[in-house]
Image (cartoon, rainbow, N blue to C red):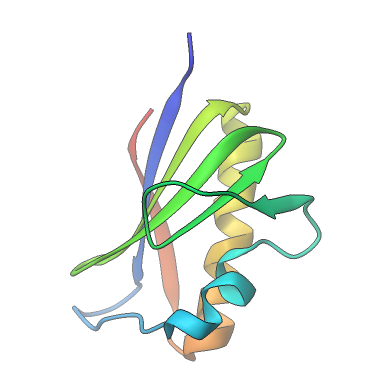
Length: 102
């Protein structure tokens, strides 16, 4: 059975939007140091990491990240942590992630 974990990357304080221009999505949302490739599918940005598809969707409250496939929970958390740090560095706005569903 294929597992899906869903996260939200949001500003640490306040309701501010975390802006990422479309031309920067691949650079900001593809995790440094991980083997990841762009794949087609739904969302604003989608990559394949190991045996899982990772999709990103811009929402009013932040970036929703859905990981579908066989990726251990601790590895998925590490992946989202790396991407959260990249978003923080890009936007100059402190961000945190929360697990929405597992």
